[in-house]
Length: 150
View 1 (tube, one colour):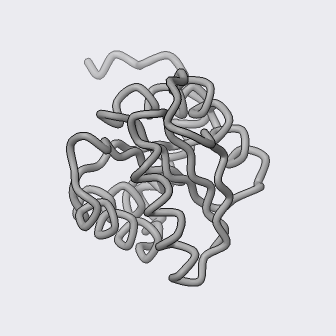
View 2 (cartoon, rainbow, N blue to C red):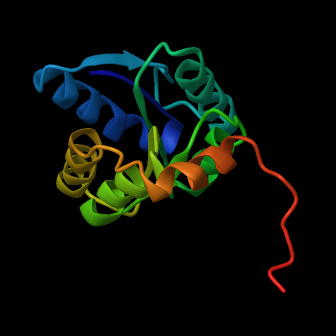
View 3 (cartoon, rainbow, N blue to C red):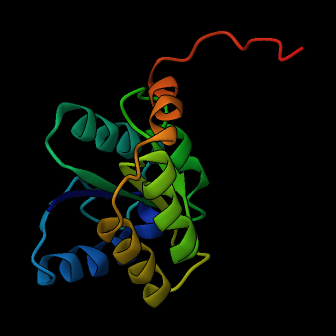
């Protein structure tokens, strides 16, 4: 699988570990930066990752920052991307199964290397269930005004 990975400075070290691990698992890894732990702004790298996914340059993406929150917001600005912030494998699997997430975000300061690897494993090995979930996923890419349920 071709997987794009990007981070900010706070997650630079974890990005390197995960990129090497993914390559060792047989994945084609596209490292979108940064190239050092010098201070950078997470939106720049989140937008770059989202563009790669939207363009089809990678099948899945992994976004990393200190908490995972900021970069997940940046990635989700692109309507072609469905990024889920996860901190354990069940959420990563459900993000794929129910939401067809094509990116996960992880907080480097909040989870360890082993938990990050477990989340990524669940993310890359779980298929989208489709069915009743497809209509909802379609709406994520083309939001319409909410209808009053009454």
